[in-house]
Image (cartoon, rainbow, N blue to C red):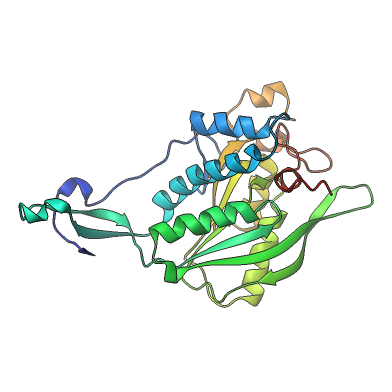
Length: 277
């Protein structure tokens, strides 16, 4: 039996959860995890010799790591009491403490192509933690738009399937590569214009982000909370790479002229689907 609780052991009354993060100068809304195990798995995913089915298995494992950190740190809390199996022997067989509030409404945004699997992982994960009646998955079909030289100019929205308003919901955008920020912008602009309600929180969850991505999101959508496993700024000079991320933000570079991340993972949407178009 589970019920709300206002008593119990004081050590569980208010839990300060802060996942380990790298030091940076991008602001308090950006969280880049300092997780050597996750970086090992991410390195394997990015290796040019890694192919299916290992690619998607690793994506799923990495997103479970990210989601644990983001949900534990960002979602609302509630104190509950749970009757354990020891209750038949002693009235003290009740555990009580602060946990994630199970009645939190949540929306996962599935972005074709690379975001479909991460969103499904997030949807299944949240259905274990929250009341499934309040968990929803929306689908948006987006694609890069490019100019005549092949440079990315933004993101085009081609089709949507949205299941209702987002008022008071925690909205998760699990998109593996945070390259330019144009995808997050397109998603949020569409929700703002076409979908009722104001979310309680928007959390973008990425495997890899770039300084360019962070700058775009901070400028255009400062309300977004960002979680990532790795920051890639591999095209920066050695002098810049020796500094704390964000210290010389204007000199940091993680994107090629065609907006692929370096060191990066290649075109992950192509690799995850074995469809190289």
